[in-house]
Length: 408
Ligand SMILES: Cc1cc2nc3c(=O)[nH]c(=O)nc-3n(C[C@H](O)[C@H](O)[C@H](O)COP(=O)(O)OP(=O)(O)OC[C@H]3O[C@@H](n4cnc5c(N)ncnc54)[C@H](O)[C@@H]3O)c2cc1C
Image 1 (cartoon, rainbow, N blue to C red):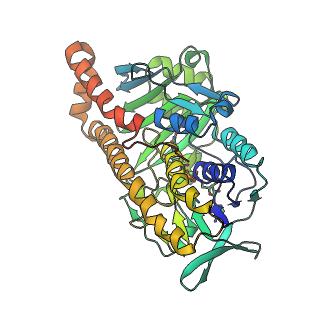
Image 2 (image 1 turned 180 degrees about the vertical axis):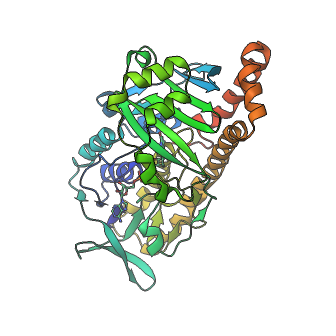
């Protein structure tokens, strides 16, 4: 049978490897890191991602690992609550859920490892591709090993080396922001309900939630991302508890100060967003962030990754299960995978841009911010209209755009 080699054991690579291995396909999965506890991995899953997990038969794994459903979203502008929306937003739907990604990945790896046709090579990065007659036929690793493949899948994330080595372009969106990430201990103010807070004060903006593993997580957004690596040293020395408190209503400032001793040093997460115009060359396909790095806004990237894995499985398995499928037949199916996934990615990235634009409007125009914080909370009709328009925008971000069903 044909050998598939997948690069990157993030949500895209691991779930695809598990689905292929489960269907009898020989799969090697190569991961640069030695464990899944990298400094930061997103953990919010929307109903579209939760449904993908159900379809993959992994819902039982989630039940056994740290996870926490969100109870509500609250938007605080200039210390005043603009509006609140309870979860789940859709009647009878699933709530957005925070799932420990390291634990999830470890559990999927354990599931994939049950299959004798699955092999995991960890702690060794892919360094280059092996080409033969203008077709990719394998990869070389940082320890100089060569691994042959009939099909290589690049699932190595937003800075994909596979994409670069395959000479595939990435159309990057102009970067407008980066994120500083902090963790600190929780306090009773956050235990009764798990609320995702979006806080805006002057030009300061941050998101806050209680993560799946019980720590408070804060993402502080940094507009205009150009000089940040140089400025990162200065941030290490700022009194972040005071900076967060100054942008917060009194109850939240008190909670921050109470946990001051537990705050970890901020970690700069550079946000790359974009799309490769072409996701494949003969013998190789990009999926997940390698093909279309997603913005963190409204938690889309993992969901899109899981849906990519399902669509790729649907297309690849019927061919790979044939004992001697021609390589040309495999290559012909790669454009079909991009064609099926790309329309959803294009629209979701547009919806993410729209979300960012709303926040930037408030951030850049003090008059709009003032009106939003002083007038909207006092005029129920206006508040309900703004709240409803936010809910309407969320529905596609939660359900996804296209129908994705695992059919093989
Ligand atoms: C700040 C931030 C917050 C986010 N929050 C969320 C969220 O809450 N919910 C959500 O849905 N999405 C979120 N996202 C987006 C999400 O993290 C990504 O879209 C998602 O992780 C993409 O999955 P992936 O498997 O394609 O890539 P990754 O998760 O990036 O996995 C790629 C893997 O490839 C490995 N790798 C890289 N290079 C090599 C190499 N040369 N050889 C071998 N292995 C290699 C890496 O070690 C990694 O394990 C967030 C993104 C950011 C930046």
